Amino acid sequence: MRLFFPLSLRIWGGQMDDWSVIGAELTEREVQLSFQHKEDTKLFGQATIDLQWGVATEFTTPWEQMTLQDVKSSWD
Image (tube, rainbow, N blue to C red):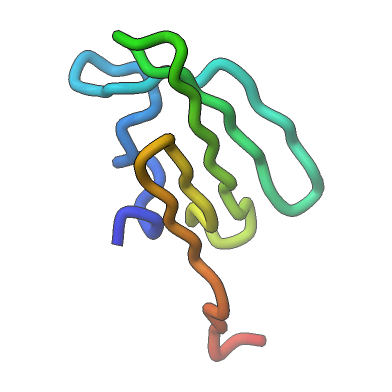
């Protein structure tokens, strides 16, 4: 469920977050975020945010990988 609420992912650098976003690559349909662990700066992760639907389609850290796929709306 976390992928449906990307602003709740603990990557934005807030006080309770484990990660900080360090880079972003924007395409027409999505943004690819790179982030670094706040305490162990040797650890990195990435997330892909679908700009049309406002959901994360991928979230990867050294110990976790989540992928959202095959989600269709009744509007298509």
